[in-house]
Length: 146
Image (cartoon, rainbow, N blue to C red):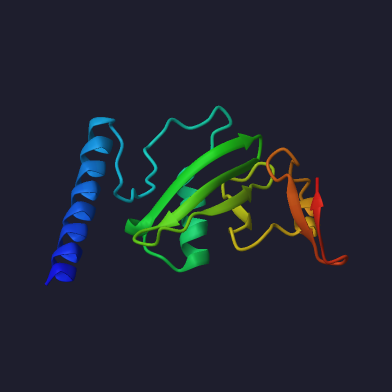
C-alpha cells in the first residue's frame, strides 16, 4: 500500500511540474506546442521573384496540392533564389534552389531539398556560391565547399 501511495504521489508531482512548465512558458510568451511553419505573403523582392511559379514547380516536383504548401523565399540574387518549403501536415522543411533562364518568367528547380545540391548542376547555370555554399560532387563522391 505504501508503495502504491508513493507512486501516486510521484505521478501527481510530475503532472504538477508539467502543468507548471506550461504555465511558465505561457507567461513568457513562448509555447511548448509544436508550431507549423507557414509563409506569410511578403512583398516580392526587388528582383521580382514570382513565388507562384516557384510554388508550382515544387508542387509538381513533390506531387502535392496547393493547399498543403508553405513556401518562404530566403534570399534572391538576380535570376537565382533559395528558400524553404514544407507540406502540411509534414513537419519536415526542405531547402530549395531555383533559377530562371534569361528573359524567362518560369522558375526552374535546380535542387528540391533532397540531400545536397549537385555541384555539376550548379556549375552548369553558374549558381552563386553565396546561395549554395556546399554541394555534392558526383564524380569525386565528396561534399564540396564552394
